[in-house]
Image 1 (spheres, rainbow, N blue to C red):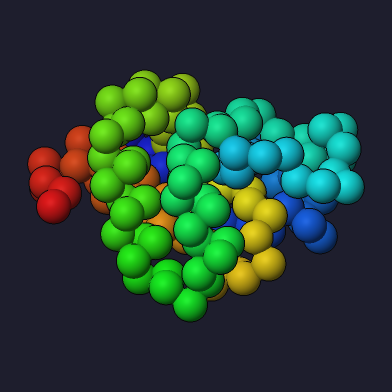
Image 2: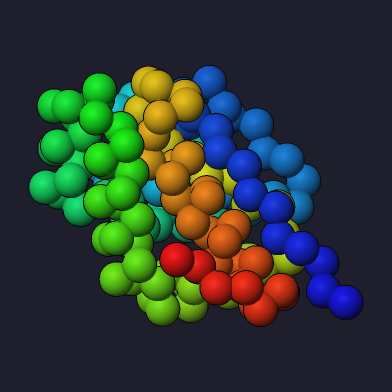
Length: 131
């Protein structure tokens, strides 16, 4: 029986601690302002897991349209599923912390990505499919 992967999200501003055994993945396309690489203490900067430039711009100009953003982002992620699963493979069975910079702690790209990754990683363990 394999150890399940656990995923949480944290805003990089104010989160400078490193939990023992956790994997810290920055999931923003741009490096967060004012955060040094040493303080960030990341294991992977997954720029390609973040929304594309056009979608990132859409969300920053229309934060009130999170549902539309989330649906479009899920489609983007689906087009990169194989690549993302390959990149996350070394971290399966670990505690993954997805780090993001956006000020809204509930409606952000990391929250969408967390849901998608949990579904994808769960497929291999349960045989369920993702729609």
